[in-house]
Length: 317
Image (tube, rainbow, N blue to C red; front, side, top):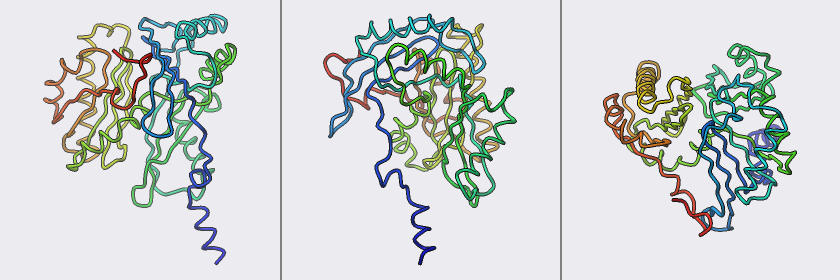
């Protein structure tokens, strides 16, 4: 009897049952190398969230890291001044917030484990051991987060994100210095994937694999989903010499061809049924036909405005 009770307790999602999930802050700061967005969202008890305020800066932000090893960005005082000015221009008071960092400052990996570890502690130890071989710095210098995505027979697939701890602490300290309290720090594309999960599920109703492409001026991230489970994640940065949009298109097509080939040869995929694209410019129109030539049946622009309502002051153009 006791063993049955313990089995039920240890297998239950206690956080969900007890309501222990932390509240997500209503203010979010999303940083990319070429733009920053500061938003304030109101969450009514019923219905979709409402965008109350937003402020977007579109320029080269040299103080935002361009890669996982990028340590430039000026002094702590300069970073504090830039962040304070951003809040002042947005008219949003610093407080609890979510900080969203660009994908290319992290190492994002899918790990396949041959068997399920008996405890979360042992899972964390295995993840750290496997990730230690993939980064050319001490793992103690990294902040690591992992999430079990699903099982493959007796094994597990784990999504792991790794960011240099010094980078995270630098932004935490600068935000705290201006009165903000970062309660959640995350990455762009995993959140984007969660936001458009319903659209991906609908597109995969015919049983095909579907994909999400997040294309920025500094990098692209490609996620492939099969039957609701992530089977492929790749982030690739663009070199400084690839800033011209047409040159960036050529690089993207080359890398997409390589990724789709891996999908077919190593992951047993056929073609991608639907590719949802969030892009910084008119890339979707330019690349629609070449991407279909690579075996993508449908290329569709992702429209985030369908996920949220807008107050008059937060209306998007």
